[in-house]
Length: 199
Image (cartoon, rainbow, N blue to C red; front, side):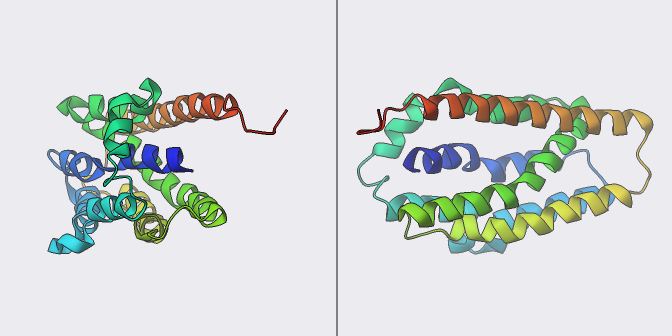
């Protein structure tokens, strides 16, 4: 569960930057939904409510920061941990793919609540964490954000063109494939772990 938590931090510590990068070029309700998401990520101007602050608190409460184990892990993490971020950032950095980036984010944001619900159960079961605020908050917030993104898509004005919809669908497909690739590699790594007394 420590490795799961550190993987989540590596992936999520830059989400606020990624959400900010989505804003240029969008318009209408979709831009509003992304901006609301960014406002939540940034704690509505209160540093102690910034989501990256909560992640650091998660590590600090489990001595990952003080011992330097997280920084070492981040430098030596498995290559496949970068798949979701690399694919998303490849879309974010190409203005012509802004709608594909939206499709990517729509999928990943919609996955957060059920994913974090399972993580929280796992953390509590093994007694790993004294600080679950990042995960418990996102379990609730991202359920709402996912709904906001879908609603914005439904009521977007001006209406999306066929090409924009095609890009959104393509980005959504990339998110699914990147997620599957990441979790398949991680599952294989976990299955290869030898547990003492487990012959």
